Image 1: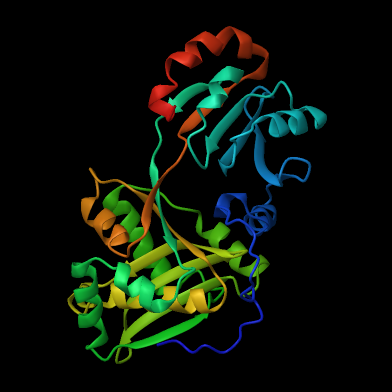
Image 2 (image 1 turned 30 degrees about the vertical axis):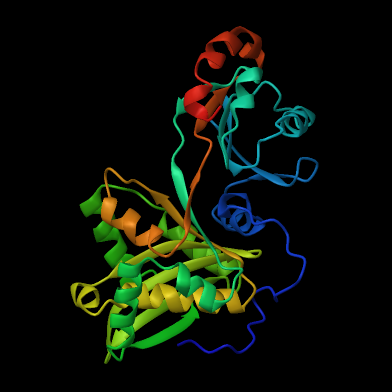
Length: 308
């Protein structure tokens, strides 16, 4: 079990907490992007929404808003106009279904996925009671294995074993995560907010989880378990202890990432087995404001699949 000594780099528990926000809408993420040479916009006049923008070949600009609250899109559109981006093509990926975007002429590009959000605001007893029985059995098995658990700030070392293992895992499973440079920049620019949790059998690491904290929320960023770690149920033990430690530090929500029940059912069951809830996102929309009125009839046809 991890110690519960105060950590000056994490928020203290408070009675009035700000609404949890996705990592992609956090000032911590913006700082990491800027350290990697990007220039994100933080729209203070539109609920501090974070907007990425870039120039495409030919000089055309493109703006992207990811995991944002777009239940009322008017402030975003007004803020973009004030910055000279009112005619810029937009890629919008709302945090929750936002069929009202069709009224602006936004056209659906991808149907909504689901993220798994773990509420850490209750006490450990409540969280343990919410575990699915098989998950709880694996946790109990892991507890009995005598593993040594550690927690530390992520070392600024691209040769860390977790990065190498994750790169092989991405290749084997056919997915892509953040560039390593961005992960290291996040740790460097946000002191103490990239926490590496590891489980050891003797001197050998058998599991690791990298969690990024942002405000009163946290995101499960990278994880790997060795074959031996799976035999020892190291992953559920490490995730459970990390969640309890985060909750004690005032973190009220842990985003476990997206799930694909068809392509990766085992991983989906593992995440949902914590008692966390599947949260439907808002899909991906394309909007070119000058063509909004022309595309509005087409957009309205797809409102149902986008969460109307």
